Amino acid sequence: MPGVPVNAPRGHLVRSEIAEQPAVADRVLTAAGGELARVAALLREAAPRTVLLTARGTSDHAALYAKYLLEIGLGLPCGLTSTSTLTVYGATPDLRGVLWISISQSGGSPDLVESTAAARRAGAITLAVTNNPSSPLARAAEHHLDVHAGPELAVAATKSYTAQLLTLWLLVTTWRGGDLTPAKDVPRFLDQAVHADDVPDVAARYRFVDRLVLTARGYSYPTAREAALKLMETSYLSAQAFSAADLMHGPLAMVDADRPVIAVVPEGPGGEAVAPVLQALHDRGADVCAVAPAGLAPGATVRLDLPAGMPEDLAPVVQIVPLQRLALEMAVARGLDPDAPRGLRKVTETR
Image 1: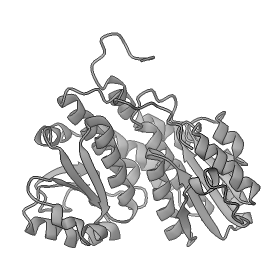
Image 2: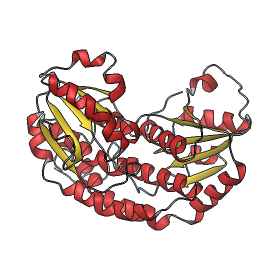
Image 3: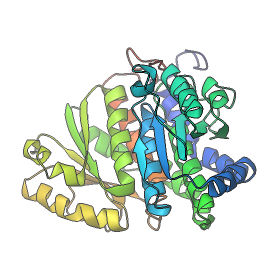
Image 4: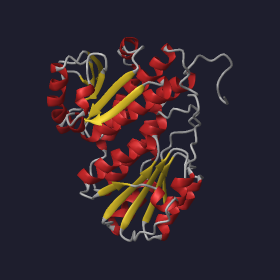
């Protein structure tokens, strides 16, 4: 694989790109202003009536995060699109007054490019958020925001994901005229998460696990979904993510001592909403790993501690890091190479 030193250990690229995330966040914050302020001003003036978000894979979880930001912060109804309605079935919806946001690392997937072009023809305001300003998707949209993650060589996306989240937070916060100051702490919080020493013990505990459940509420729910994807694509285990509310509506029945649950518990309303679910899991004797600041989820079996003091809406930028590291360490412990998961490519082309 290009960029990998001869005889590099398994996971060399993923490990390196995880470690880059504090510097990437610094770069995103330094670049914030200019284009981001212009796009935010344009959106304030356009005053869209609703937002449609389109993405695939890891970027789909960034889109889900944006949905929470937009619906809570701006009161705008948002939907996650089904691109096939445009690319496969040829639908021609009336998208006047709609903001269409396409989120992609590479900006190269044909269905995202084609659906964004179709949305633009249908009257939508189109915005692409990518790690490649010269990509087909960036050209297909009227407006573009670069997430400034730099080249990402590992198939499993890490730094581009957190860069997407931070860029989207900055966009929505600027759009609504909010305070950008909390973002200044993100690089420091990321550095703490990158160097926390609790991940290896949890990875050793779950090394031979074949099935996992992940859960969260609110802003943190996309973190649970992205972590499930990382575990599936690097360790080839069955990882299912549920909103903590949905977990209580049936899937709780499959939880037992042999199927660990990873719960992402933030400070704020989302964490409070997860508390009764954690109690139900405890009552079932479940093995629960809490990804949470110290003091939250005290009954958890094991923990991946997060820095305290992060605003709930910004916390997902940092929450995912211990789970990226967990996926990396579990894959390596199983003798797998998370840099190049079997059957996967960096750019996935779908229609």
